[in-house]
Length: 460
Image 1 (tube, rainbow, N blue to C red):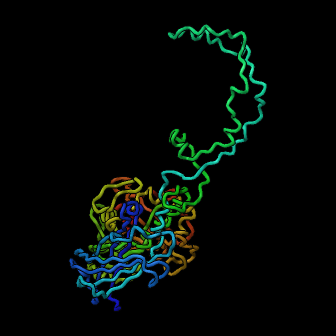
Image 2: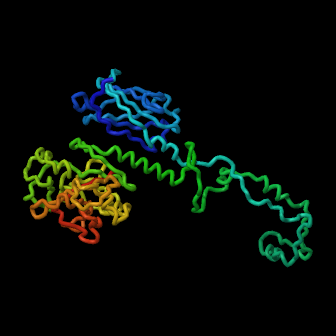
Image 3: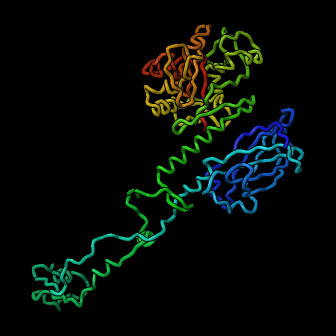
């Protein structure tokens, strides 16, 4: 089959979707024709197959669809609405998805794409159980230490004064029993507790019938879930969460304002862009400085042409430098986590607050954070640099503009937060080519809003 240009935007899966009765999942792709043009507002034919084991082997499910792309060439549909999808046993990976496309809306498919389904389907195993099946056999010691043949003797001194107590109630006075004689209970009057306890069986359903309050106690030492309704441990759920974050990060993000794609990386519970933002609606010269109006700069470029600025090596490598008004794009300061400030970031992403930067740095060990975030080697950072970039964040020294002069390229990197300190000062983070602590630590905590810096966005 002839392969045409086809950009795969992402396979979007969620546990919530798998909890539905259809078990369907969403699918999105950006479609281009053989001339690399977007296929906009057009019906395209789709043939979808799911294979188990390896591409081109066992076909366990297929369906056909006709879907209309939007004005950006984006195709959005749901896979799994045909007969047989709900019968798929997801416990025997790997699984592969192949999509065939006919740009004319028919069945003459000219585009083919195959991808492996990684972690998301296995999230079916993480559904919390409503009950645990099977018997819970108690191992209490048998109650056999009492020789019941002697009966029980209770003296008068061992009996609370029931007569005086009961005569105070409105019930008829209990006065027919002479407690001075005590009580004698024979063996025949005692139920055989030994045999009862030895043969007792209970399961969790019996226990829950008595009440469902666990008294704020943890259930521990659970096995790894195997079946769909097995209870899941926190360790297992955390593992699934990590796999989901890694998978979502692997999709990156496409900024549809300029159709630029950025890689992303999951660090802790956050997903960060792995490159500096490059959105450039206009470009300013170094002589133009403002703390109130948006300004956009490309390091070292003194022209006014956006197209010419985008051809510069510093734009390609280090991205755009934004003053704080351009960064915020008219929105208010925030120090919440997450900030909820989209600012100049693409849709679905936001500017990190100072609290979000702090979470990242603390997760990486505070003083060790800078070396784990910086690009390794000396291709862009001057020596000495012991950076490992073990996070994949790939921080670069994009420099800044100070007193109408571009400075510190290859020496320092500066990144804005969405948090202001005052009407003219906002908080930022800086990395140095040497092994310093990632600033500010402790000072300075902020800088003038007219200073341009790089931007890293965080996924909502």
